[in-house]
Image 1: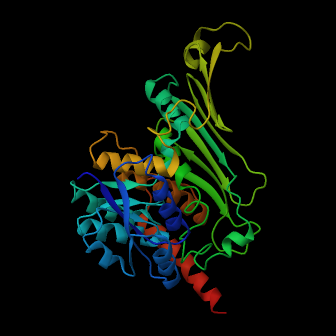
Image 2 (image 1 turned 180 degrees about the vertical axis):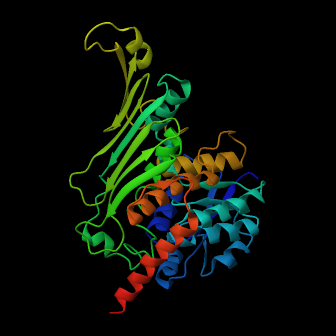
Image 3 (image 1 turned 90 degrees about the vertical axis):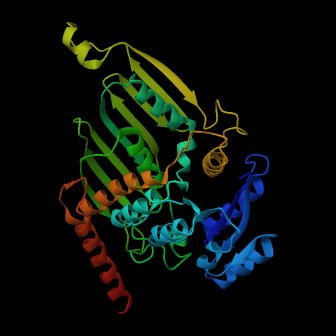
Length: 383
């Protein structure tokens, strides 16, 4: 294989965004080519026919999968359909790059992951574009190096996903349990939920409040979650789509210091010695460990953008390069999509039941609670 021929399922807002990205890839991603798209909506097919020269347009993704025109599939549909389309693509011998979230609930994503195991010759990836951000990469390196020491706390306030009323008025599936399967946790925050668990690991339990504030929608747009980790560390995850102005601040504390990522900058404040060691031998009243700060700035402050393009282009480049054997490092394996979704499902379940939820979650209970909300939403729409 000397190039990767991509097909996109769904040419709505996100799918169209990717079609435009492909026109920019020539100087950044060699070997990636968009050759086909499909959409059930006639107006989106017409758009594709008029604007995507040389790209075959299909109405049915089954036909596109069997066309022989593509090597890899990008899935850009409403969340519920991600796993079933991915499974069908794999069974047709196609590589899969799925957009976030991996699915709505872990049971369906587990099925997708099991199918992926049956096709070790295919590449299964998730569009976790924030994993290309050098600041999060740097944070992971610091943690894995042992410099931060044992993790004691992780706090992420991510409330700058502001969405006005007009956003939810764009499409009938937005802001609904039937269409999205969730709100801010399923639509905006999969990237942060992925990074939260990528950096700190998966918690063992969660308590949470989930609510809807200031918008005529059914799903949550305001979340505060508290979690515990196996080693005794704790975490807090706060998110919303109605705060203005919002905040995006990640703080990770360990016995060896603290990492803060905010406003395009990572600051690592390193203790001269681990906190428990200092506390044990210190004799000074109100004494504190000595510290040294290191600061890293900018999303691409030390990377060559042609070699390491950021965000979505970075993932497409890495995915393409891995398929073409130009790199042996794969950034976002698809099987890892279940991890952040597990955290998300646990937060939902804790918010719905007003009880602490253990991880792994009771998947049947989750589906039952989700179905309740879908049925209530359906009944309300019929009134």
